[in-house]
Every structure is written in structure tokens, then in C-alpha cells.
Length: 158
Image (tube, rainbow, N blue to C red; front, top):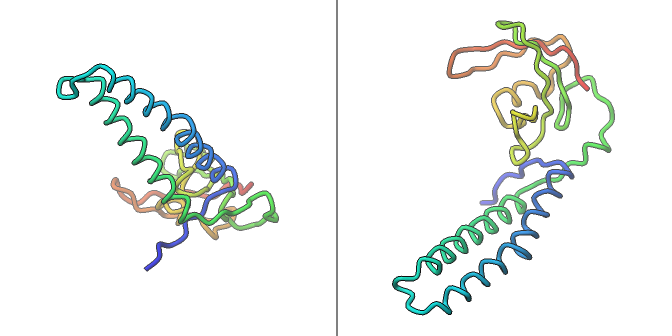
């Protein structure tokens, strides 16, 4: 059974692709050189540099495989080609008011591989992201959180 496609912006896809490229072209050759140097130091059973380099190589290879798997399940969505919408969709920037604290928050809805709440990027697959999709300005959104239900009012869609 194939994995469901995960939405990602063109920019997010570019960043993942650049990271894979850097890992393959820079990080992998660098660690191979470290292993070669460590091998020149003799006895491998007591060679901490060799052990460290091999562990680093394993981490790099795991990261490369993980990034390749993520990219293989991505569906690239060009949000620059999207027409203006009165409804929240992938790529929308929204301004919300937390109705409990009256705090105003601004989020951009992108894919889970791009999400970074500290930078205002919310995953469309997060509970709040899922609740926002399809909503319009002035709609009230309820989201179940570990601390109970939170309500937000959609102030603006940009």
C-alpha cells in the first residue's frame, strides 16, 4: 500500500532537495575522508576517531534515507499560482484571535515538513491546521488541546 501524499510548497521542496544534495556532496565525502585518516592511525579496536567517524557516517546515511523517503511522498503545491480565496487553504496566512486570552496570532499553513510554530508556520495536518482549512474570516474554530478545547476567531485570511 502506498503512503499518502504530503503537501509541500515549492520552497519547502527546494530546501529539502538542497539538504539532500549537501549531505551527499559535502557531508558524505567529508566523513569518508575522516574514516580514511582514522584508519591510518592503526589498531581499530582502540581508535576513538574511527569509531566516532563510523557513527557519524551512520547518522549521515540515515538522514539521507529519511530525506529521500520524505521527498518521495511529497506533493508539491505551487502556492504562488493560487488565486485569492475567501477560504483558508494550503499556503494561506491567517490572523487568529485566541478567544480565551485575546492574543492575536498569525500563522502560515504549510506542510508538516515545513512547520515551525516559532516562526509562525503551522502544519496543515496539525489539529489547528486541520480545523482552519476551509474556514472564512469571522468563523470561530474549536480545537481540542491537552488543556481542553480552545476557540479561535479567524480575523484575516491573507
